[in-house]
Length: 461
Image (tube, rainbow, N blue to C red; front, side):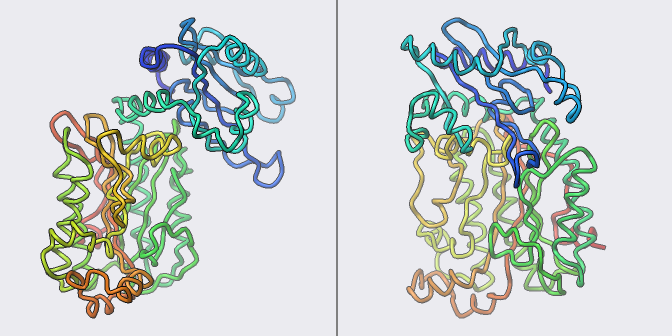
């Protein structure tokens, strides 16, 4: 937990931005796996954590702008809870740790909100993403479930996004702590990526390292020899020589700050010529993108720079043809690079995606493209100091997509389909690092994780 004044300052800035009314913060509840007492590991709502810092279920909070007060709602635990789950400090003591001077029982939250509604005061809430939260909010505010997201407070969303996008030095320290653990996870994975093992052995070893350090995974791990499937969570394939293993994993700190790293590893520890050729193109694209990052630059332009770099490399390899810049402008490169370059990261691995991706990555002056590939770019807006972005270009050979485009005779002037056909057994290559935008440029966060072909091969040995 950060110092209490950090949370108090965050709430003060929020009050100033919104101006009037009350702001509702709904903490998450336990989520049963298969019966009520057997729950998934608890994860607090990220906005609740950002403003109130308490990482346990059964909590809600109100920031009352008009009366300039913050209130935490929750119940002190009884003897049965202590027997089964252990002791927790009193609510008033927990509230003091995050700079809150007022507490009340959990049931008083509904009473407080109902009273505000009856008085005609503005009641602001964020869009719910859990069914249980949506049910409570809907009943409390008398809003049908289907209308809850649409009626969420736009001013509240934008204020939270603007605050959370800029990471403080304390937040950066948390992210880099997660990256230190993640580096050890990757060093172990590279040693394990040998013929005869299963993907699950690599995945399990990585998660075990995170758990042994008091961390956990920030998202379901991607550990797959079928890297052409972008979010492949199946881990049952046998590793065989000549395949590439795409590993996209990140630890989450004890305070719930995420990191997100991807490396592509040759099974058996040695890239063949074809693999290295494609790998080098992706590495060049990523390095060009990272070099271009600085305040004032549109992340969309950085995405296009990476795409252009990789399109030129694919042309040199004979898989694309024609003018590379024109090919990117028309979206032909998306056959190989069908996703966005990266996303914001912080308390969520896709930071604040629950508030709406367009609120986070776009604004009134930057609209989402409808072009295939570019439309999946989660972040397009101008970079500012304190933003933390993933930079994760990739090249993939997706048989179904190649077949579809070829059948439709799509981009014949830019794609050498006959040569592409010879790569349909390739899989994919993706590389990803987490980058902080600084006052004058950028800094790749965390300790170095092997990335050049030579360093990856050395780590595998």
